[in-house]
Amino acid sequence: MSDAVVALRPDDRFGKMVTGISSKSFLEGLVLPAIGILVFLLVWQFAANRIDTSLGQFPGPVQVWQQVQNLAVEHQREREKETEFNQRQEERNAKKLAKNPDAVIKWRDYTGKPTFVDQIRTSLLTVATGFIIANMIAIPLGIVCGLSAGMYKAMNPIIQVFKPVSPLAWLPLVTMVVSASYTSDSPMFDKSFLNSAITVSLCCLWPTLINTTVGVAGIDRDLVNVSRVMALPWGTHIRKIVIPAAIPMIFTGLRLSLATGWMVLIAAEMLAQNPGLGKFVWDEFQNGSSDSLGRIMVAVLVIGLIGFALDKLMLTLQKHVSWDKSAVLR
Amino acid sequence: MLGRYLDITGVGIEFNTNGTKFRALQNVNLKMEKGEFVSLIGHSGCGKSTVLNIVAGLLQATEGGVALEGREVTDPGPDRAVVFQNHSLMPWLTVYENVELAVNQVFRKTKSRAERREWIEHNLALVNMDHALNKLPGEISGGMKQRVGIARCLAMQPKVLLMDEPFGALDALTRAQLQDSLMRIQAELGNTVIMITHDVDEAVLLSDRIVMMTNGPAATIGEILEVTLPRPRDRLALAEDPDFVHLRQQVLEFLYAKHVNPDSKSREPLPLHGAAEAAEGGRPSGGDRPSGGADTEAA
Image 1: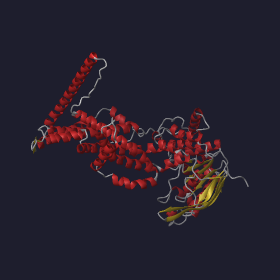
Image 2: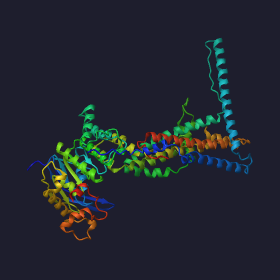
Image 3: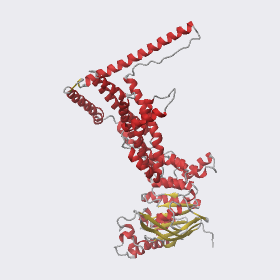
Image 4: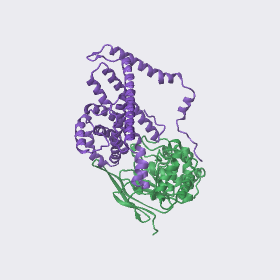
């Protein structure tokens, strides 16, 4: 009576793994990318030798690698200085207290130049903040627009007009608004941090909003009808049907959004002199030493690698959250 | 006059797509008793599904109305559960969770957590799916998915069970198995059922009455055929039964001689004896889904 159990899980994929890494997959997985990188490095070196600028020759891979090491050393040195500074301060304070227990102790934070690593950290924190703010607005709004055709029609012109706006156009407005409205004696965030984060938000709002809307509007009619027949309350309908059904599209939006946010952030930092990788690039450009181009090239590569890592992070998150474990994600 | 359980009175519907009006149904009247099994049969596009959706409350009739136990139907609700053709399980919920979604909604206030759990398992056992509680729909076969879809509807304890070509997408053998399951369950629980089908044998085998619909536009009920075959019915025994063969012939005559499929209107109406063969082989292009196992067995 009962049907034969048909396993539709793609177990054969596992089978391939058990039979050993074939020479073909080894070639495709490791050797080919390695060849690609090698060829790129050679072309880079070849081209760099032929480009002379007012700041010296364009940096090749070797010079860039040297700058990576320099930046690492500078970072360490700066940290050591900070520890020393703090130690001296503690000793001084301890002495003061020993002399007079009622003495007023002052603590000054170390105010050294931010290192490359610090700049990376600031940039990541800023993009994360902007991304989270944007999507806390975009996902709920996208769900509403997807569920209600009227809401979508009302929102559509606004979305279409603001979507293509460059961050650089927003930035002066954001700066003025933040400096006018965020006034506090002991601010929790730097104004420059808020400026960058809000500019990022304004730009990475749209991909998630649009994709969520499309995902929610495209839910299988039958599933919606099942929900109507069960008379599910709207909260349950959204939690159990709308969100799971739209998850793949929401994540497509989130990934586009994070990529946009990261690109926007670098530009915003550069223009507004907000701390971060963008400012690092601009400072090096203004600095104009013979090392500058190499250091900028390091920043370029790091920006690329972080962008790549952020996308992988989202992909991993998507795999974790998605119900369809067999879906091929790339 | 007996108190009618389900009453479809003068139902008509007009669709308005981009300014052009299309009248799909006109003056559909049907009264059903509690525990009755009615099949709706007709060619593609004749508005069978529209009738079902109006009863379900998913579509609103332009004129006329539906009353269930004397109360007018205005919205969809769990008292008129629908089994959709392509199972319509949530692919992200397990078999158990799919039924649970319905049960939690219907019995949230009247059953305890333990009772609900028992009720879900009981209903899945009814359709022989209690062995796959934690499987996702993607991991089970089409027939099994449809079993779960039926269990989900049974678990809502609907006053009327509406089935929209429930076995249309299944292969012949699976379809026969599910028809037998449905007959067993309906005999046991006494459900009131409206089922849409393309399959003449399925209609004759399962129904108390067969409602045959004319072709659209402005489709309506053409004839109603009483199926007085004694229950329980056995498909093998019935294949040879002269009453069964006669009933089957009457449905075929309606479908293929009196109301030829609109897609094949250019053809001559088929002579009566050729009708059965027409159902088997000479199916018009773009027409109905191939009919199921019962057809092959009976032919």
